[in-house]
Length: 110
Image (cartoon, rainbow, N blue to C red):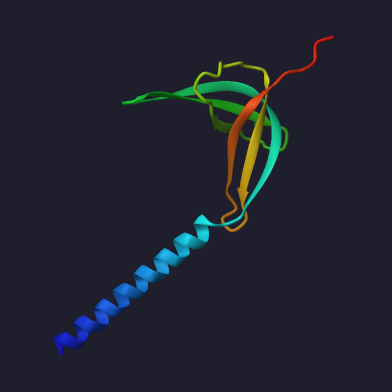
């Protein structure tokens, strides 16, 4: 009796593992909708950790009520009040969005 229960338990465990892996692969390979958007830098934040620090810009987009947090690449200066171009990555299944810093947008000077 215990042997039969042990075999069923092992079969259920293997089935759960395969289902989890297939769901993970499906979500990982989900198509992303990418568009470029322009916003204005409102402020910045720094996250300290053992390896140093990470800078984030808080950007106001015209189509969002809340500020968007974007990681600023190293070597890029903080330019508060300037326009930035971001790439918006949206996932259809989960409905989540992510923003990546592309560049500062230089306005032509007259």
